[in-house]
Length: 268
Image (cartoon, rainbow, N blue to C red; front, side, top):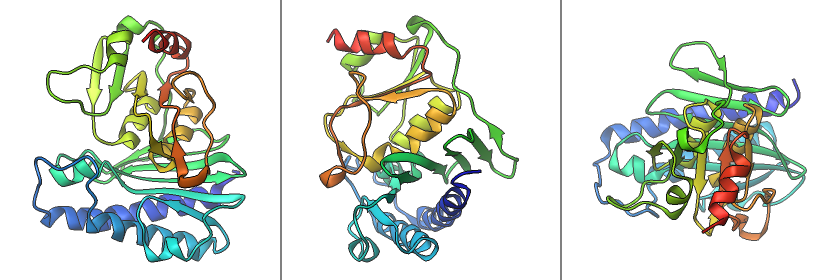
């Protein structure tokens, strides 16, 4: 399997980071009103563990990650082989202690995301994919099963996942698409894993600014499960821009609903 070594390294690093995170989680005092941009010592410790593990295996590779930590500072920030890491995606969920967080690790080969892992430590659920080898999910001690996106073909019967909104409010995209069901969670990694596993049909990210590490690992999960990921107007996703910025918003889907969802969103 192409990218077998990279995927193995990502899985190993994610599991080790998950153990560290859950040890911190066990003694962490919940912050019910945690800010969206909160960061914790667990974020930084998780990142250092992941980066050190990857540098040990692939010392010449470039690194892109959310937190400013020593290993990131000492490594190249760009190159043909690039690792993109979010050590705790959904730190707000970690801080609120609702389990809505994940570890996201992706490998980008010459600008194309080629391997990725989303690990949900609180659920002991790991979803992984490598280019051309499908998307697979491991839960607890159960063996991996192959993931496939849903076959839902009508927006009116679709399940859409998005970030948690303020109580009593509905995003303009949800109003436009008008899905049958909405699932809200803090972690983009969790949301994209839901689409890859067929538990949700669509994920809409309407933020005008976010970063590579928020979506990179999730993109290959969905694509290898048979779905599609683009900007909210159908733009191709690119990685490695200065500051690792993403500014085209995001639509991830089972593929069947993609064009119809873009059309609805463009109406607003």
